[in-house]
Length: 490
Image (cartoon, rainbow, N blue to C red; front, side, top):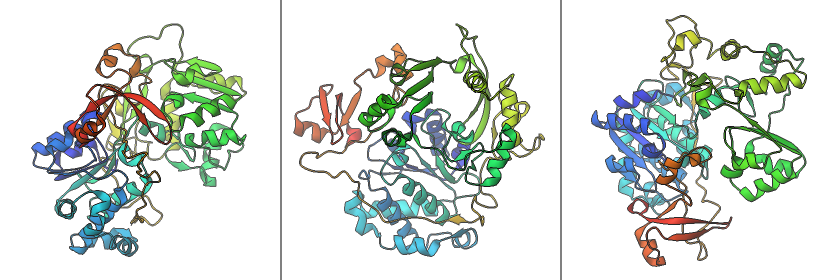
């Protein structure tokens, strides 16, 4: 996130796009309520009437798959009506003319049928967002786990550039993370093309720095594979083994039939986890590790805030923490990896990552919260609430406009498949239930086989009663679920 979560409270407008804070992040939802109490306008863009839409000044119930068309139309109105921040665009950005050339073809009238949103609502949205003194954009998995996801993120960012809503308090572009500590995992280099601190593998100076720190002659110059590539790579003999920590691909990944086939073909599967997940059940080797209450370390919140957490109870059965397991395996494979505690690991990391250097254990303390970049160990540097005050993370320091032509989703509605299915988050369970599904109390809230929301008109037409078991068929397969007839899905 470019700005702190607490900054939501005093913004003038919150633009929520493909994100359901009440179900996904109740704490963030409280800050949105604070903003509303303080007089902020709320715009919600979601196919369903989610909880936050109930307090919104404007709800855009767009059709699934029309994100880019809508955002281009909003940009077109802002430029056409001369509502954009000319000073910011001229002084702190590049690519405006190319952006304008694309969006000028997306008048509200031309996308009304594509998006399902009226011309009046599109223009109202553009005017509200552009005229707000400070405006924040929040988005979630409804954007990133969908067709043209990367393009949608960059198009949302372009709206912020267009209106000067970057580089100051109470504004920004803010992806509210969809998984526990996914921000921290990315910060620590759990990406196929970066080392910790977002230092890219492709640059020789980064490879040399980390090779020297880790006491090896060199490090590979090619990036690794992404998890979505696993079935393809296994099928072509490029991957023969997988070491999986805290992930359940046999429960959570798309194209499960291909994932199952890949697991059957791999020579070795190692799973390090706290539960007997579906993936662990298929593993050749299981390494049980401690849970969050049995070890200590550092989390990063979605808004880049480092915070320490502490061991609450001693682990039973001689269980080891994840870092201890990794150290022992590395040592037995011929690379001695010796740390006495997590602070030694953290201090090594800080010295390799300039943006993290100032975030010491002492500064974080027991209840502290330090947002990177934090580059100085002194108490004067308490971190950075908002990014891009002086320059952007580009070679020339300028923000880069981007958009593209809208493309219809690959899967089309037809007589055989006349309905659209959109996956959502639920309050009772977290993500795909690998952990929360083991809790009996939570299971009572929303037990298997879960629910599928159906709007009242479709339910009546199909003769489906509330709470009735139904089969949901798609081109990819089928699943049984329980019908929940709801006005949210209208």
